Length: 170
Image (cartoon, rainbow, N blue to C red):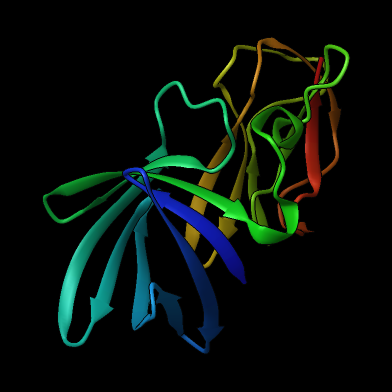
């Protein structure tokens, strides 16, 4: 899978592949082979060349654009934005804002772990809607606007593709 990644303002093309229990990533001409172990929601242990790194991933506070997150590795914390190269569009189109409707869209292929809302439920902007697991990381996808959940197109256990609409907020 190819992703455009912006880390603290620096843009990089990231290629990620799963090979068995390992993740192979190439960024900036460098290749990384990692073993990733989930230890809690948004918490991971990364094993690289015999060293262990603690990693925490969470949605960036106040983030409206999908793919915006805070990633802490060891003592460092970074602002990271991921964009799937197959679905490059402006932030508003990516968030699916059309005529008062907003779509919650899967940023990458994965499996739905939890659905946090019900059809007809009122949600605030930034409220969690669906949790999707991709590459052994759980990502809570949030509502891009305040409104009412008018469509839920997934249920726990469903496999989703990048760019797939998971919920619609009106």
